Image (tube, rainbow, N blue to C red):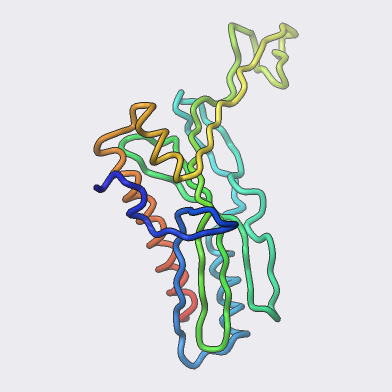
Length: 203
């Protein structure tokens, strides 16, 4: 049924099945060099290296980058760009989920191929905050007035998308329509990426 993540397209890496989206797209009359520059432009437009201001489940705001490197490898001669990306991940009324993924764009004369895989859902449960009362503005675990205070660690949970759909949602109470919402969100994010890439490659 709709709650089975295997309705999502599958790929395999290192013999392991995973959710993966890939497609070969023709762009008639455009050479490899121009398509490579357009692929670079697409990645730059995503702003995946930005710092996000994330409102955690407990209401505390956390400022953080969600991926280490938006470009992990690029080679114009080979026509390949690989890296990491992310998106806000809507799931019902919850606003504390984000999606990270790996991408690979390969260009050639007259077309390109893309792959999006290694999807992970990040759940920001608790942000950094002081424990107990302290006067003044606290920083680095010490209040400005000199009184020591303790800080809760950030509670960030990360799930491979396959585990999230098959375990996390069911065991921790995110079930029913929310499961369908999560699958729809993943598909919508992919469609947005594929459409945005297509628009840029056809400039």
